[in-house]
Image (cartoon, rainbow, N blue to C red; front, side, top):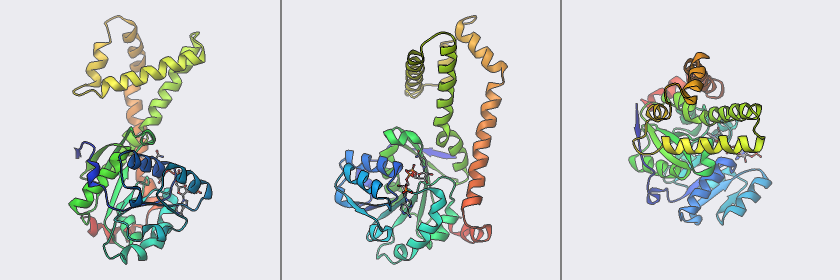
Length: 299
Ligand SMILES: NC(=O)c1ccc[n+]([C@@H]2O[C@H](COP(=O)([O-])OP(=O)(O)OC[C@H]3O[C@@H](n4cnc5c(N)ncnc54)[C@H](OP(=O)(O)O)[C@@H]3O)[C@@H](O)[C@H]2O)c1
């Protein structure tokens, strides 16, 4: 079950935030933080790539490190913004620094497929929040679901929410297991819409439109439809019905969609995404014995 929230006020932000990994997502969040007037002296980022550090320096005047341990010293929140495959080694190396801080920071992981039991195991048991953002976060139009382990305080929950609100809207989950469905809906979701756009553009070109016109019409239609569907009180089914006159062109198209098994196909595709999210946790996380050990920390 989920509890939806509105973007949190920037006043709730952690006093000092360290980003481990300064790539796309970190830069999106940092851009949002700077745009919302966050104190740049409170922001730190570490990344081993000189090119990435150069890109970060162009974003603003916050502290940039090559060394992860130096970046987290004194941080109230540590955002793990590295690829999931690297997270175990990076967090294990940081655990002694995290646990030795006078005030224990919380860790916010945005890595896909790494469960809280693994994060707790690698971090030495510091409070852990998991977040699943999506690509529109790069334009601060993302949708992020969050899950907090019981060790996370109400103040830290508010801080995690305020931080992810820099990437768009935020929603708290009560069950970590729901993150697989979130991954299937919003995490992977942008690609489904991109695929539909590709197919519509190809079909419009096949019907005689130029590629440029087909692309403009299809992408602007997607944007307009998304704006209508996200208006307060809007219902996609009602919006569809309102533009579908009996015997009309839209009805002809939608009948053809359903004749090809559109709804079951979408259900099957999202089930595949959720299943992959679950198997990723097993492939990239700690072995099941260590996971079971930390299940108690989450209960
Ligand atoms: N992008 C999205 O839309 C999206 C959506 C949901 C979740 N996520 C999650 O967000 C996380 C970050 O994704 P991203 O797209 O921002 O990836 P990214 O652009 O590749 O950024 C990761 C950064 O971490 C750096 N890095 C590598 N090893 C490191 C180390 N030992 N210490 C510190 N930094 C290190 C990488 O440097 P190099 O390039 O030199 O390796 C890179 O600059 C991933 O776990 C992903 O699953 C992303």
